[in-house]
Length: 379
Image 1 (cartoon, one colour):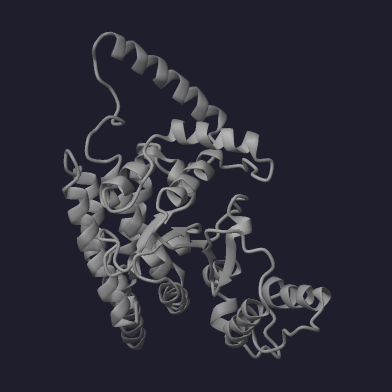
Image 2 (image 1 turned 30 degrees about the horizontal axis):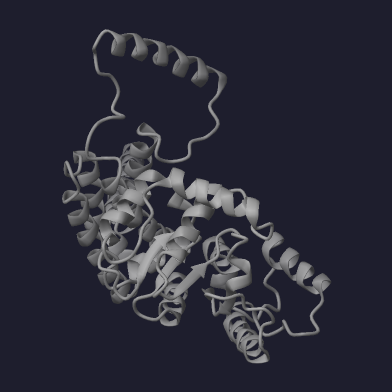
């Protein structure tokens, strides 16, 4: 009898344990669905939430208004963004980008190449027979719809997957440095997407006109920019003519180097030359040598002057020195000064970033533990 009672108690405990585990799993799944997926729950700053929601609404409307409208897959991206579902948005964005060859993909394996070759032959045969194949020509994805969705994806990547605190700081520093009506080249992803998200209206160039520096060589992106800004500022659309003009300048002016992004170099210079009444600012992503003599440091970015700067004045140098001293002190501590050696900086990098040893560290652990924040400000 005693043995039976003990057996029942043991069975009850085991059953109760599984009930508790099951309840915990259900609670965890509910929490994950409610909070982990929702940018609106994880972001702490209500201003950032409001900015992202406004960006989603504006870009969704912009995609819809494109010739031919937006495809259902694009509409889905904006729907995921509208409810703050970052994980679903990101996964769907990359799947759609891979499908249309709009995002970089990993180097294909041997079997991938065999499959792609076979499908190319089949598609070619079907096309010859008058059968349309593939989704590459499906309207409503390429051009404005995709570029508008990319701006939203990039903004979420900066504030949700990146670091809300430092992305906000980064954006505010840039926004405050640029006068209204200027033209701004966002050379890095952070410089482009964060500023786009924090602008009152990128579509209206309010407070200034924003365009990617590197992606100007992409015809779909140029079409996207031209549809937004055409008529208010000059936006080049003929890449071949811009390339010929720039090549001619390289040949006649030996101080101008073609660089690695020849088309983007020429297009950026065309924008600069054909908007003479605008001030220009650059978030440097990679060097365009024609810009170098014209650049003047201005906080996190550069002012692009109309005439070569020559020697930087003592005032400019002191202002830049003071800015960076003030900028990095709360991030990594106040140990960097004019006498700090390269060896000391290398030792700090090895200790803090490689070994992740924060003993004696007087900066912000959040900064050094965030690859996104550190990478953003290092550029």
